[in-house]
Image (cartoon, rainbow, N blue to C red; front, side):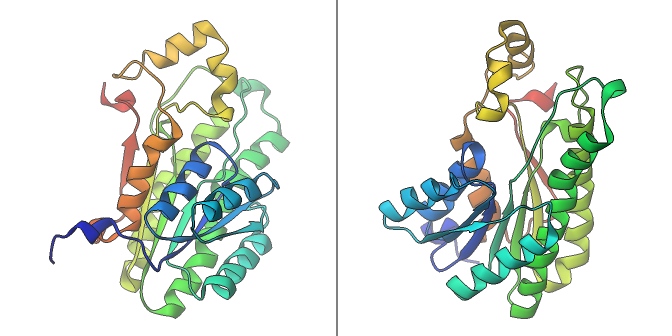
Length: 257
């Protein structure tokens, strides 16, 4: 294998990113496009169209596909539309996620179903739909899951359902990596630390809680969405051809203690 500057080149690749309207998802969409991929930006909000406009405004290729990943049929339609538009599917980034904060003793069945339905169930069926196409294409593919440090750590902030979902993502990544390796499909997870996004806005606005969680990172700060992009491009590119079933924590040292 020759080492060249093209190792991270994604020219000619077609990608789906779920939840691409803002935060980490938007940064990933822009990052994949910057390295050459055509991007299908999916989500439930029309705000995703702004991500598409930004990509195309820079000369990239992108489309918006409405998709609620908690509805498996939506995921199947999104995959079919991506293949119809770009001719194939090489990369799936499962970024869509929701979080709630409630004491475990007060969690409702509806809350449990919503968080698990998007973060774990939805991730599985979107991955299944993508893998079916990748298997048929016969050229392998990449599935990149956005997990969390909360997949391997506990917390006192009332995020028990989110912990359960992200812990499930970790072991599901390993199971799918083993099962789909024979098809050349590499499956990996990225576990961000606390990132400055709309999802963590309430934490940032609570000085005491913000300081508590900020200081648990060895780097003593929250990250920004763009700091997740490098790991995604690594997993999507030829730089990671011998990497599968792994969880890479981009967490400012949160899990290093």
